[in-house]
Image (cartoon, rainbow, N blue to C red):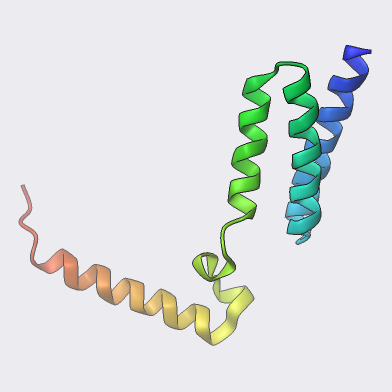
Length: 96
């Protein structure tokens, strides 16, 4: 029975990864939560942590994960601003 539960947990984790890759973050979080519950019940803390990391990654607000492809001109603007800010900060630093 433990082998079956472990297999189910790994399957749910893989399902979560697939859902994440195809753009279904809410479904992915649910799959990772279910996998985490099963891993926790079996005392597999390392796998629980992997699930927690995935859930945390998927729970990051979309505004902090802007990409050019997903957000068009806004993503390009944010990227440009970040490059400008990085360039300005880099000018005042001494190289060792």
